[in-house]
Amino acid sequence: MTGWEVPIGAAIAFAGGAIATGWAQSRIGSAGAGTVAERPEAAGIVIVLEAIPETLVILGFVVAAMIIIMVK
Amino acid sequence: MMDTGYVNARVRGMHSFLLDKKAFDILIVRPDLDSVISELEKTLYREDLERALVTTPGIHGFENALRYNLIRTFRKILRLVEGGTGERYVRIFLAKWDIHNIKTILRGKRVHVPASEIRDYLIPSGDLDEATLNELVKQPDLKAVIDLLAVWGYEWATPLTLHFGEFTQRNDLVILEYALDQYYYQWALSLIAGKTRDEKTIRDLISTEIDVTNIKCILSLNRDGIDAADSAQVLLEGGRYLDHNMLMMMVNEPTVTGLLKYLESTPYRFLLKLPVEGKRALMSVYQNALDIYLIKQGVAVFRCDPLSVSIVIGYLWAKYNEIINLRIIGRCKNIRISLEEIERELIYV
Image (cartoon, rainbow over all chains, first blue to last red; front, side, top):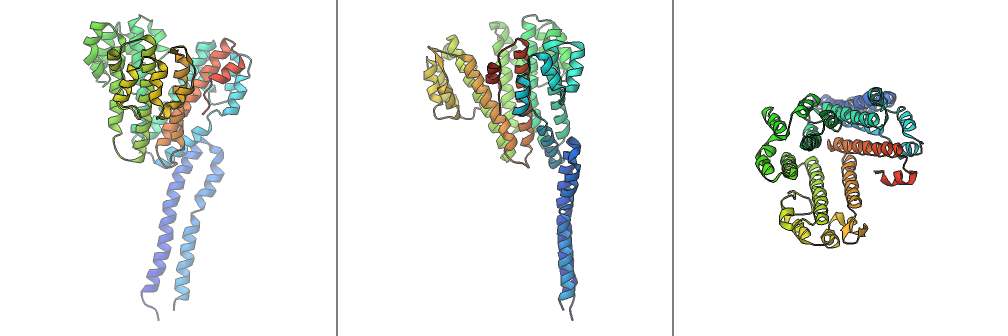
């Protein structure tokens, strides 16, 4: 039987990934907007770069899921 | 307030549109000015060339187009950094053009050059905008120009007003020009007296500029045989490697070779390798070498720190360098100077 530690741990893992993703996307987004303003042809690569930090939140989600499923 | 990442990305985007060595190679092999203009119309200069050449054809139109482009670029950069940390640095850089404009107007008024002719040499990219400069140019004499600057509350009027009495006594424009330069550099250095990396980078750049101005000044004074006491009055304070004592020792040297020896332990030692014609130096060779050094230092700031606002200053220097090179090509093509000579004159950074 687990107590409150498991959901709190999962929440921290997920929140950490989400906050980091938000911060990274805000920085990449502003730089990307600047790039596209001057070179519209770079829009494709900027969208790909903008999506890369999503991996952090996915990783956070996986870790959170593992905590909930595996910690008994 | 603009985000630094956004501004840097835009400036990097603008930097990527600067003409590279290959583009200059194409321009210099063009047979005449018209074909240089046709080639440039394929670039971002098109709009400015069309605007300028409609009213003034030939080399004057070409130079006006370059001037319009420079002004447009500087204004765009200022709009981008407005309200951000970079605004202070850009304003310091652009204030140089205010000083250039005031000096040009004062020189023009002194020898009674027509207002329209003075206007052709002005670059309204600093605090003094086009309308302000037009009003200044319309003034009948030097005193009226200075008074108008003071009435409008521009700080550049302070050194001019303070030294106007001395100027009228000695009738020497150098007094006003030196006062203006000294005031500008002290003002610039006081704005960047902090310890951040950006401030240090810009401070180093400005103090290098002071060194370069002082070396040029000492070489000219030596060539003209001006005595040491008078020379000391036109040296600027705040240099990076050359302090007042070192400058005074250089001023007291009778020969160019002698005064250049003091530069051996500084980064300006490259001047020692340049040719000296008899006792007097080939001034243009020294001045060009110093200008190239300064431009290289300015452009190098672009590569300093990718997250720093000082890359904006690096871009402004690179743009200025591009305009200088295009002006050289335009003028050389206009009077049909050889390819080799044009290549020698260009500053590749």
